[in-house]
Length: 564
Image (cartoon, rainbow, N blue to C red; front, side):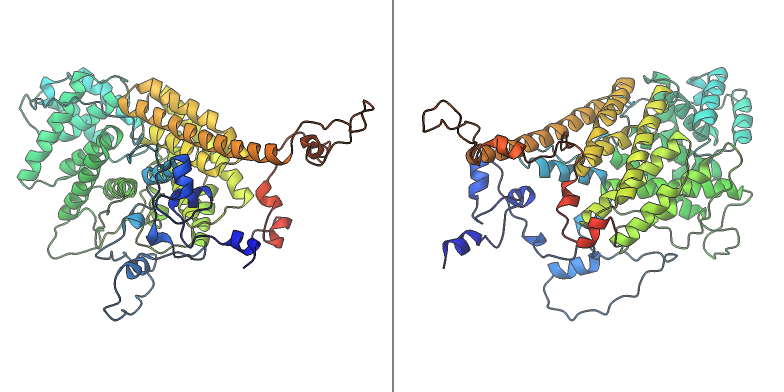
């Protein structure tokens, strides 16, 4: 065997740090590279099977590879039609359930940069952070917490800032109960759960720092809702109160508590028949009577949307209402509820149980990028969906053409401006915190001159939101974003040092003296680095905008800019 063939031999299996950094690995544990650079050496045996970069590995196929072949192969199930509800398998690998999770993406990104110093698994910037103290307080009637005048002011804030985007509370009915509640000094009225929820959201969107009254209102609503459930009361007021509580938890609570609340709300809606259309005639469920069907659709749509995305974020199962009949609500001028809930069909297409390949994901991306949205909360929701689709495409090792990438970066720029605007006007929608952090992760993953140029804008936006609300969650998210940038910088510095050493070893800068001793310099040798500089054209000032990927393209058709 020649020395050349010996040099070309490589280990059949490489550890994850060497595979990610594209280093040679000797296959030992720990390998030589990890020992030299003090990396944590580990092997991912389950992911060694290679597949086509555009192929989708279905959950069923992934399960089959992890189970012994002791049972006969089951027949292939029929394809799931878009209008059919997918049947979840009894067991689904965690990596499939987490395919839409921004937290999982951030974790993978950190492990790629530095497996040793990567932050622990956690959901960063899920919302602005908690506004509640850990001390449990006694539940008080709403009339003992705030005055009627304060309630009117808080209701005005709610219907000005929140209702245009999730308008599931009837304004006239709310003000009618508000005007009569303080004239009836009873400890509890069924509509109190709605008034407490509206008031708590009003405080959230008007006061940057939580007041004690806000805490008391949230606790009063929680206690009253538990009482209603204990007595089996599933009226419109109860369902609306639970939906308001879910809204508040999504903006200030922990992911687990919000997920539990969203699941409970959907089960309550199912028990009350809210998910059934007016034309359905079930035998065991009595649908609610005398309820505006537009309000019903808004309540169901909001609960489905929030439960779906919390499940995506946490990598957990979502609640699927069997026999649900949902159609987008009708929105008058100035109301954007339908625009927000129109994201449900595209979001459902990302369900981890549904098989989807790169071409389908790119079609979804084209669809959502083509939609025109002007209001900041709607733009942030659109950007959140685009970032999720981008992560899914990237996970399939597929590329996005230049036009799509330019549109994605343009939407990212708009979303960052919208987040700053909402933070300035004290509108703490969850995506005000979440989207800027995920944008930082996405720009680092893109790792192109265009994406890195937007990092300053993204970090400045994240800092603005952190300064506006000054919560522990936002501070930690801001520090973590900085840590990710630092890890990427260290990795690039390490690679740059390696290349610099390589040039220093082969192309020295010292000029050789003339052996004739006549005082004139000898002709520059080929290993003088200035010889390399002379090869550069005069009209190429820097490599800042040079696309090496396009220059070294493997497919000849791509050199003509064709995306096939």
